[in-house]
Amino acid sequence: MSNAQIEIQLIAALAAMACAIPGVFLVLRKMAMISDAISHSILPGLVVGFFITQDLNSPWLILLAAVTGVLTVVLVEFIQKTRLVKEDTAIGLVFPALFSVGVILIAQNANDVHLDIDAVLLGELAFAPFDRLLVGDIDLGPKSLWVIGCILFMSLSLLILFFKELKMSTFDKGLATSLGFSPLLIHYGLMSVSSVTIVGAFDAVGAVLVVALIIAPAATAYLLTNSLKKMLILSLLFGVFSALVGYWLAHWLDASIAGSMTSVLGILFLLVFMFAPRQGVISAIFKEKQQRKEVSLLIFLLHLQNHEDPLERHINHLQEHINWHRIQAKTVVDLAKKNNLIEIENQVINLSDKGLQFTEEALKYITTNKPTAIEDLKNKFFLFRG
Amino acid sequence: MRNEKLAIKIDDLTVAYDYKPVLWDIDLKIPEGVLMAIVGPNGAGKSTLIKAILGIIKPIAGSVKIFGKPYKAQRAKVAYVPQKGTVDWDFPTTALDVVMMGTYGSLGWIKRPGQAQRKSALEALEKVGMLAFKNRQISQLSGGQQQRIFLARALVQNASIYFMDEPFQGVDATTERAIIKILKELRDAGKTLIVVHHDLQTVPEYFNWVTFLNVKRIASGPVKDIFNDDNLTKTYGINYKVAINP
Ligand SMILES: Nc1ncnc2c1ncn2[C@@H]1O[C@H](COP(=O)(O)OP(=O)(O)OP(=O)(O)O)[C@@H](O)[C@H]1O
Ligand SMILES: [Mg+2]
Image 1 (tube, chains in turn blue, yellow):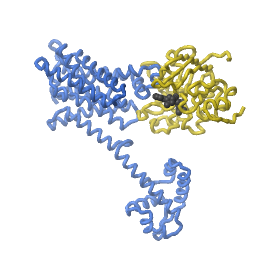
Image 2 (cartoon, each protein chain N blue to C red):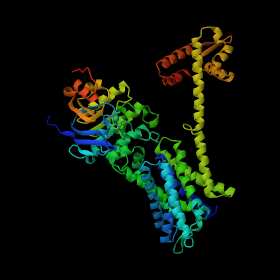
Image 3 (tube, chains in turn yellow, blue):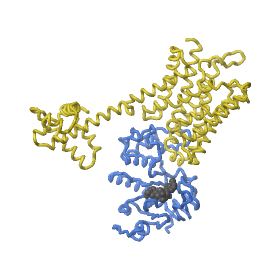
Image 4 (cartoon, chains in turn blue, orange):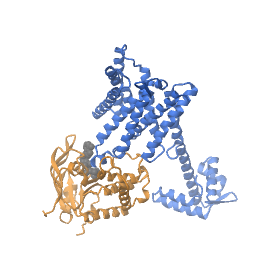
C-alpha cells in the first residue's frame, strides 16, 4: 500500500466513525432525514464562509457552515410548529431553498469561487491526500485527516461526557425535563455536532456519502441489539468496515470511492435486514410458518378429539374433511407423530394419551379466551416445534 | 383545618387547551403525608391538573406551590408516573436501564450512574416484582409490566411527593395489591402520594385523602369525612350509591 492509499482509508474510516456517533441518535430520534437537509443547506454557509476566509479548510468556514446547518433545523422546526405541514414536508421546503441560494451565490461569483457543485455532492476522496497541512516546511499529513480527526475527537468526548443525558432525553423527554435536565439544550447540542460533522466530513467524502454514513450504520445496528452502548459500538464498526471494504472495492472496480462505500453500506443493511436473528425478515417468515403449522396441528388434534367415528379419523378422509393440501396434511401428521401426540393404527389416527391431555388443556385455554397461554402449553408438550 | 405542613397549595388555578378551559378556578390544599386519590369522570381534567402542577402545561391563571415554593425550585422532590408513558418503546434499552434513569436526577449533569444506582434500581424492580424481567427490552413487556417499570423508576427517584396517573390501569389484581402496599409504606414513611384512581369501590380501602374533580374542585379532604354519595353524585352527575365500609 502506498502512503496515499493508507491516508485515504484513514480519512474514510475516521469520517465513518465521526458520522456514526450523531447518526445513532438521529436515527433513534427518527430524525435521520434532517441530516440530508443539513448536508444540502450548508452550501450557502460554505460559500459565504469562503468569501470571508478564502480557505476551504478554515475552521471558521466549518463553523459558519455548521451554523447554517443548525439554522436549517430551527427553520424546519418552526415550519413544523405551525402544524400546517408535516416534518418531512418542512424539510423538503427548507433545504432546496437554502441549497439554491448557495448555487446562485456560486454562479454569480463563479470567477472568485473554486467550488464545484459536483465535488460538493459527491466529494472526491481520491484527491484528499493532495491537500496537505504544512507548518513551515513540515508536512503534517492531509488537511482533511486533521479536520475529521478533530471532529471525531470532539464528538467522542461529548458522547462520553453526556451519554447519560443523550440517552435519557432521546428516550423520555418528559423525564429528562422533570429531573432538571434540558432536553432542548441537548437537542441543539446534537444538531450542532451533526452540522459540524456533516460539514467537516463532506469536504472529503461528499454530501451523499455523508448522509449514508450517518444513517446506514445506525439503522443496521438498530436491528441487532437492545443496548444503546452496543448499538453505538456496532455502528462504529459497520462504518469503518464499509469504509475499508468500499475503498478496496473501488480500487478493484476502478470506481468512485464514495459510491462504492455507499453501496457497501446498503448491502450491509440489506443483509442484516434479511438475516438478523430477531427482527430479520427471514426469521419473521420462518416464525410465521411455524405458527401456521402449529395452528393447523391444533385444529387437527381438536378434530380428532371431536370425532369418535373411526371413519372420520381415517387418513384419506381427513384430507378431504379438513380440506388441506396433501403436503400440508402430511407435515401436520408428521409433526403430531414426532411429538407423540397421535398413534396410527390401520390408517386410522387416534389421539395418544399425551395428545388427549394436550388437546383438553388447549381447549380450556381457548374457551377461557387466554390464547397466549397456549405458547407455554406448547413448550410443555412439544419436543419438536413446527 | 389541622395544623399540618402543606405539601401542595393551589390557588385559583385555571387551565385551558386552545382557550377552552378544562380546569376552572381550582383551590386545593394537600397536606404532607397523605395518600390521596383524585377521582372524577373521563375528561374531568385529572391528568391536566397533575400536568399543570408539574409545569408541563402552563396555566392561564393561578398559582401552584410545592412546600411553599414553585415547582421549578422543588423538582428534585417530585416524582411522576404519567398515564401513558410518552416514551419511545422501541428504544434499545432494558427494564433495568429504564429504572436506573430515575436516579439521574440525583446525579446531575455528566456524572455517571454506578453500583449504588444499580443497586437501588434492582431493589425497586424487586419491590414491584419485575426483577426477573430486568434484561428485557421494554417493548417486549406487557402493558401492566411496563406500568410497573415506570412505578419502579419513580421509586428510585426517592422523592417527597409522588404523582401517579392511573397506576393500576391494565394491572392485575395481585399486582394492584402489591403496588398499594408499596404506596402505603411510602405514606407511612411521610411521603405524599397523589394518585388518579378510577375504581371508586376501593377508594376507602386504599386512600386516606380524596379530591373530587370535575372541571371544578367538588370537594377535597379525608376519605372518612367526605367520601359519600352526595359528593359522588355531584362529581359524576348521576345518583351514586356506593357501599362504604366505615
Ligand atoms: N392536548 C390536548 N389538547 C386539547 N384538549 C385536551 C388535550 N388533552 C386533554 N384535553 C381535553 O381536556 C379535558 C381534560 O383532559 P384530561 O386528560 O385532564 O382528563 P382526565 O380527567 O385525565 O380523563 P381520563 O380519566 O380519561 O384520563 C378533556 O376534555 C380533554 O378532551
Ligand atoms: Mg387522565
